Length: 488
Image (cartoon, rainbow, N blue to C red; front, top):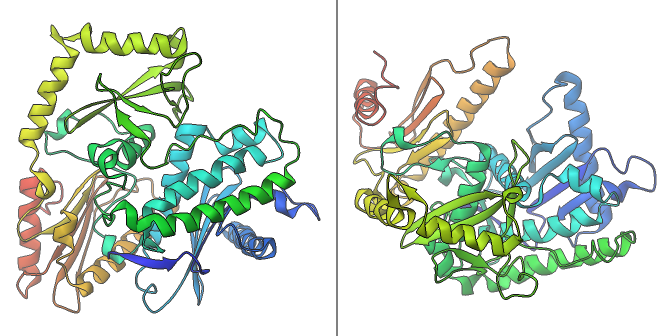
C-alpha cells in the first residue's frame, strides 16, 4: 500500500555508505566500506557496487566539480546518491521492475538517506569525527549497522521493504508538520528541529509508545507481531556483517567494543510517574536504578544536550538541557526536571499548569486525522522554513493511480527546474513557477512555487476547462495561504 515493494531476501534494494578517503590502495579496498545492506552479500559484490558508484561520482565531477551526481537511471536500476559528509557517500540502488519503474520517487529516496544521516548525527555526532576517533573503522561500523537496521525496520511490511513511491507524491519528508494553530506562533525550523521532530514522531509520541510501531502518518500502520519475521531477517543480516567486521577490526580495544546504544530500537521508551519519558537504551546511572538520559549533538553549534521529553496526554514537549550546565549528572538533571515542573513560572503560572493549558488548547484546536482536509482538494503545501501541511493520507488514497502518477512526474519536473535555476548564473532561485497538467483520467495536476513556497494540488472533480482549475487554486491560495500563490 502506497510504496514500492522490495523483497529483503533479494537484491531489489542495496544501501551502502563508503568513505572515498579510505581503501584506495590495493589490498585495502574493504576499508572504505562503512555500511552495506544486505550485509550478508559477498564482499566481492559489495565492492562491485561501491566501485561502480565511485566511478559514477568521479565521472560526473568532471562536468560538475561542485555538485556531483544525485541520481543515475540505468536500464535495470536507479542509483540514488547523497554526499552525507565530505567524501562520505550514501548510495541506494533500487532494482527496477514492472511495478517499480513508475513507483520509485527519486527525490523521496534521497530524503530517506538524508533523514537517516541526520538522525545518526543527532545521537552519535558526525561520521567523520567517529572515524578520526577510531581510525580502523570498527567503531563507526559497530554503530551504523544496528542504527540503520532499526531505521529500516519502519519500512517493513511483512517480509518486504516498502520504499517511498508515487503514492507518496503529496507528502514531504524533512519538514515539520504544522499544527492547526496560527503560523505566526511557530519559531524558525532548523536542522536540529527537524531531526528532533522526526525522532519524536518515530519513537516518543503516545502512539509510538503504545504500539511500538512507527507513527509517521504516511507509513502503513501494521501490528508489531506481523513484522517479527522480517525484522529478524534484517537483524540477522546486520549481525552477520557485524561479526565479519569485528574479525577484521582487531585494533578495537575493550572500551570501544562496549555495548552499542540503539536509539531507534522499538518499545524502549516509557512514561514515568513524573510525566518525563525514560528509556533503558542508555542503561542505568551508576549506583542507582535511574535510567541514563540520552545526549544529542546539535549540528550548528556541535553542543551536547540532554534530551528530556515530557508527556501529558497527547502533548509531548522536548526540552534540551546543555550538558555543560548540569553538575552531578543524572542527579543534577533530576533536580532540574523537578524545578521545571514545580518552580519555573511563565507569566506567574507554574510550568506544569502551563503545559496542561497548552495541551487543552491544542486538543480543542486539533481536528484529528482530517484536520488538514479541504473538501474537493488533495494538496501539499511546503514553505521555505521547512514546514509542511497536506491532505490526510486517507484522503490522498482516494485518488486514482493516474492522478498520483501524474503528480509524481510533475514533482520531478519541478525539482529539475529548481535545480537548473540554482545551478545557473541566476541569483534568485525562488522565481515563480506554474505548471498545469491534465492526467489520463482527466484530473488536473497543478504545481505553483512562489517566494520559496511550494503548492502541489490534484483536482479530480474539476470541470473540463483549465480556467476552472486555475480558479480553484486561486480560492485555495487566498483562503489558506494568504494569497501567496495568487496570480494577481
